[in-house]
Length: 210
Image 1 (cartoon, helix red, strand yellow):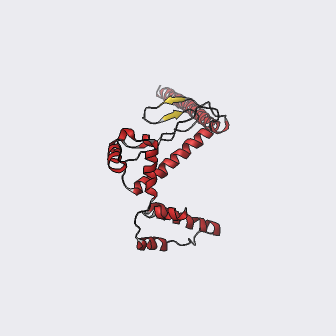
Image 2 (image 1 turned 135 degrees about the vertical axis):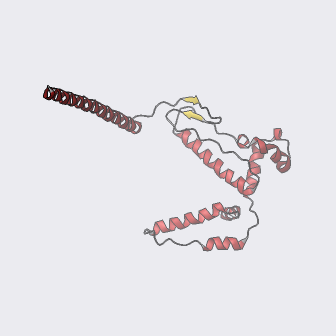
Image 3 (image 1 turned 60 degrees about the vertical axis):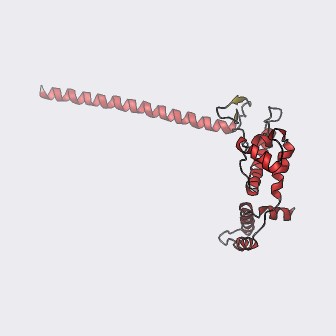
């Protein structure tokens, strides 16, 4: 009897093992199928035609979502006061304008994205200060041309400490670790532009180039 009971227990144990193996096999098959489905969907993004563009509302203010495209570029916001901050905003706005233009050119005949005007990019907390103290007009009378002239005024260079300029430029040198001569020159130019963009004398350099 003991031997029979042991055989029955062994058989039941084998049966449980087979059931577990079968369940595991099913799970693995499901996982493989899911992986195949995801891979197919990812490839479909690159191989299929673009879906028709549809505009929908987003939960975030100032941002729209377009089906078939990335998120519409968000306009920059200006809340500074110095010429450096104004020039930085001008760069950001120009980059934003280019992104809008590029997106619209990719959607010929479709709904075009409206570019935010300069007047819509000013932080409401600083509008009154700028209008009264810097432009000299009531805020409700400011036009798009007033804001354009206001920011273009930042192109006039601030006083430049030539010693700091000389020290910064003296650090420029070829990188011998770059094998290609063309790449070495390109990196040198890139380093020069980086110093120019980060410096308070950027306006002077740009005006001298014009």
